[in-house]
Length: 319
Image (cartoon, rainbow, N blue to C red; front, side, top):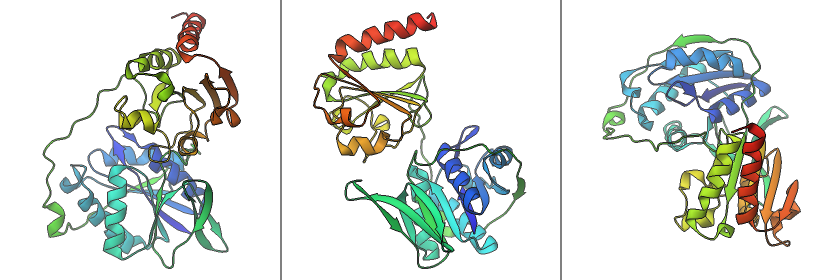
């Protein structure tokens, strides 16, 4: 089975979501990557280490701004040229727009929010959560090309070594694809890793009591070299940015260590972090649901425990 994988990039790095989908494609069949936009030719060879046997790259001027329609033109041309069985995307705002546009352009089926893929009896089968993420269901397609949008954080990139053949290509842009222009692009300043990339995450919920208490978590995360995350409740209350939300309506993460402070552990949050290596819960309520699935539970006041934990970490690391 042949897969075409859209590899989104920002700056000088390929995004983890696309690389995770690329690794899965390589495990199931032939994986061909696609890198579009400024710097594509320089970044394309790096996809070989994650399973790509070949990578198409284009730096067409229409691809300079991060807009979806020119990318739909490019991918549609490659689908016609390469006839892949499936086209995979790692979920992001841009990738979701591109996947939807490509599905409409090709009149192809698109399954989204997938957490895994497999080939069963020669057919591609996707797995996705349903009914509030309480059950997993199998989804399929009626015809090729099969389009799949993989949930953020569901598939980790796996370096397998090897190189990839890189080929430049040209495509024609549709008249309507260049009608939209990018007026301005801003990026929130960050001093640490994003929650998608962090090996350690310190997350906070309503149990913190007030938005200014997130400084406790920021200090601990800084000491551990990690990132701070939040539940939907505190994000909806305006306590912390949406970009840090973990859960059913936020992001799915799988760090090596996940520290949950003042988080009850409702199913909507659990589905976004249950793939973490080690889960540590701090909550004053001994009956909080999170204690049912965490690896280490601490019953107590997080306002006392977290600062002491930060001190111990700093002392251990000599900082």
